[in-house]
Length: 227
Ligand code: MN
Image 1: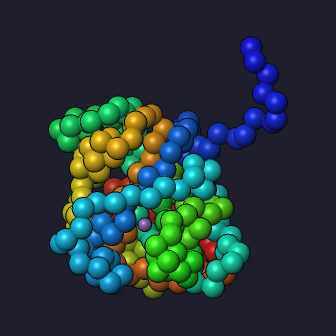
Image 2 (image 1 turned 90 degrees about the vertical axis):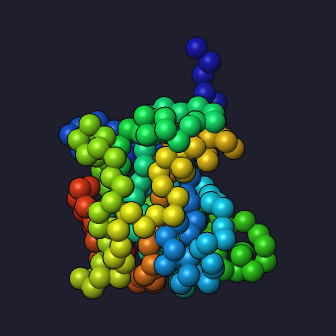
């Protein structure tokens, strides 16, 4: 066996309801997947093909706390459904796509909006605004065996008890099978890949001390404290 020359990095995992952990390989995030959010960000939702960016696997954080990140004064919450894949491939057909899903969860695509905005304006990549430390708080996954494939139902986020985001999963522009099929045209999709399926309207800033509570019908609740 070949010895590693530095200490082995920790493999990121997401807990699973009922026991066990889901090991994470990649994190794909879709942009502007709810029309009302695309409009609030200044875009026309009818004219866009889907687009994705990535976070790092170790950005996922099931701890229930979100440390306010450095180098930003405008960090936003984006409440999203998380899709976790148990298998993959290339050129996956939409009709076969859901067979690759292990389970679903609740996640937050926390965003340094000021830095993302600067990068957008300059035509540069978004990573500095999106893929930072602990930028994706996530709850325990619910296996498909327990919850099926949620394609409708309330998705909502409150901050300090005030509802900020409130929509229905059926308002996604690109549905889960379409996202998997699309991604598989460009990438080798594989077990351990996670898709963050986009945020509804109502994104906004948080400050230290805020308590975010996200809910998705059938998937329970995610509580995250900003520290
Ligand atoms: Mn997002």
